[in-house]
Length: 254
Image (cartoon, rainbow, N blue to C red; front, top):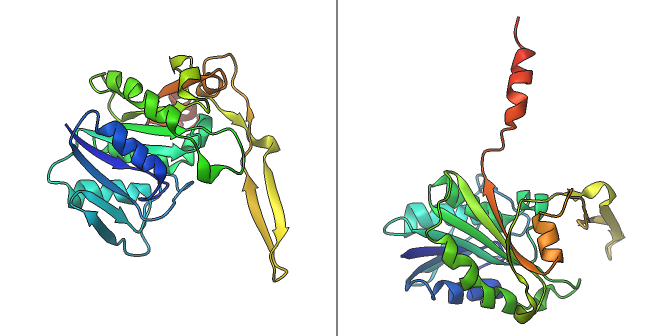
């Protein structure tokens, strides 16, 4: 099985090294193509207004001067001798839960793989304390990664779909298990924009994305993580709201 690894934290991110160790449990045909620097929050963006440059680190390890989407595109169209059987994106430093998946470069890389018809899975390690982004413990992801991925390797994936995995901020032995759950959503009405002043006296702004969990019931990725489970969520690329098609079409009838 040929596996392509990518991420949005950059080619030197510790989570990518964790993902490589997880992938090695399934294959020895592993390719890596990731951004050369962090691209968190890049979403499904594509570099169009400047050239994308490629750097080779070893025989099957590359980085690009662009987004996670660029990295997957370069791997599929320029680097790999044949399409991979599986694309793994991550392990991201931080959560990709609820509607935050729309911002996520980690999830976007898996989107790109799904668009190409390749089985694609995004993986993220939630961490609990602010100010520790450089010391995120990936032990939970490393221990549970194989257990989560193994059932997904031959599971049926619907066309243009992917799976989003989040590991809770707990020691591996304290995780209660794995839940397959729906995507939740946040209430960002109380989100913040933090204003500051730089040393030259100019204002700057920092977006505070601390949403409030706002999912009815108790069956979403947000609650699964809060309850101490690994969250596994199937996502689809078709955003069409089917129930609105007929009512909207009727408004254009003459």
